[in-house]
Length: 218
Image (cartoon, rainbow, N blue to C red; front, side, top):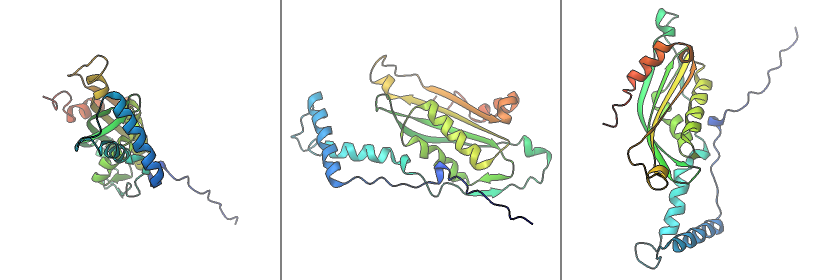
């Protein structure tokens, strides 16, 4: 009997852990660039409160974008226990609000808000803390809200192979509040659907109701 050859499985993005290593000389160079920008914008760097601002800024930006390093502890999945019962295709698991913050790649200003995750399990469920990890893995990068939602839902779709996955994001963008139109009140809401959520309007409505859409900022 011929031996079956198994092709190596391609490593998923969320499984890769790649800590960023920046040499000390490069850190100093980045701090000098930041100092030049701040001074050009009008900041004095000769006071006790501002002498270390360029260094703190670069370090803070580094910390805020740690999602590029991956998360080796992301995936902890367990078998479902529905035994193919009638609720296997309709029962949702919904978690939220999950607070997140990110950095807009257009203006390098923060945007922040809350996420809700829903899925209808098939053969696997995921550890509840891992849903937060998925959101923050992708949020802690230079990003856009639209991309963030797609990345989260695609990752969960791959991890869970669920009957359906839903993601709802509600965020405020400082690039709108501090510049341009200077809109102080508006938040941006985005929804993303996979599987059963795409075809089942009742399932989508139930998910949005569980998210308490429109009530959480009151």
